[in-house]
Length: 99
Length: 428
Image (cartoon, rainbow over all chains, first blue to last red; front, side, top):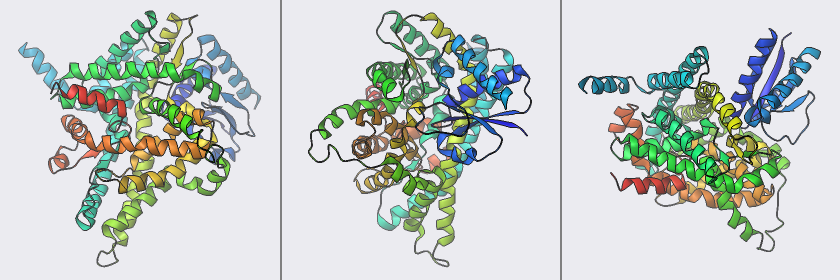
């Protein structure tokens, strides 16, 4: 079964694209072939939480609720230095490998 | 010279999708993102732009006859068709867009060096508020690209100053150190909220009145879904336009309009998202480059207003505001556009206001009801330049020739943008 990462933001237009781009690039570098990175609206997230292939949520906004999968704050993708970005990507890769 | 003007004429005649594709590929090569990324980004954005115009064509075909019918039946002069984010088409497709991007980058760096602002405007996507205004001014001045760019830069400079004034509050409330949000009508909503909230806090009774955002979301959350909201609005307009039609009493037409408006509400943002999908990767390298240049200084890195939407009071306030705003726009004399697509901007305004109301739903709703009124009038007053900009880009020329008018709140109704349009109108 594939592994699904959703990147959620307020409009699903700009900020989630920045995160998606960085994560996809790293996923390709690591050679994971079964990982899908999907941009969504935070408002639509409930439709994804029930999916068994969901392994992680990356949120581009402050989160006011809890989820049953690991959650990462994606702000470094917008404003972080290269180092901060790489550290976050390392954590994401770790989760992908563990599942 | 003859060759040059022929070449320029040929280039502009390619149409906005091809122009933006070529411009983005060139920008990508200049910013050294690699030719693969540049080509992919350029074509993706061109496709998004073409898709956007397709969707708008569908909605014009459905809405224009309906609002015309309402006008003849009830004398309701609400004949402007609301296309809101279709303005992304003007923003990324008008001939001066590349010049504007380069100009604001240079001006922003200068302002940072001279310490006139703390906002590092790296979020190239958000330039579109200034770029759409630039497109209006371009149309307003009979095709003057230079004045268009000047107006756009002026608007974006004002945006960075407003971002300086609001950044600390946004950072604190949303737990995002280091950010700033210079987006057009969003940051203006914060400035508007400051005195209004101060006043509301001095009215006994109102001061502590609040409503539970979770409760509202559970009860009315469905209305916050763009497709559902669009269907309901379409059906309501349909009832007024075709309510007593012959045969099946117009039910086919009413339901058809509901579906078409739902299509617009769901697909329009997706098309804008495809445009962004092409532009964002190309401009990411600018973010890295500019960040490294200003290391060690206190700066606010510009991000999109979408990051402000996290608090539950945002959606709760919005679903209450949707019907209220349509009603107010319907009642107010002189307002010629019923907001439909433009309602999509309301959550962004709410995101800018909740840090000041501390997440209070009642106060957020009051602030935004007042804030929206100038947008209702300004979107009517600026409609000619707005429509002309689409026409000059070769879009919907036939329908515009037959009297179609296109408006929006986010760009057309923009308070600061309105005054800049007035200023540059003096040159026309």
